Image (cartoon, rainbow, N blue to C red):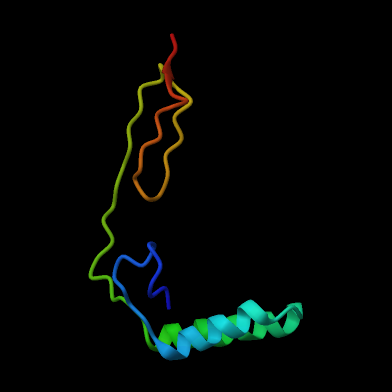
Length: 86
């Protein structure tokens, strides 16, 4: 579905999903668009692009002097707004 875009690290593509995404992009009626999204989700449930073998559990411990740090689910660290307080 994301074939040809930089964000498609796997280069995975599915003609059915591509067609549904095209329909969604062209649909302006909110209810009709919601139905297309339901159809897309059902299709992806039955035809997953990936099967994850496991999901690692991660923990973060932060010293109370660290200020401005915001943990996130993708484990990318943005430290621009982080500082040491007292």
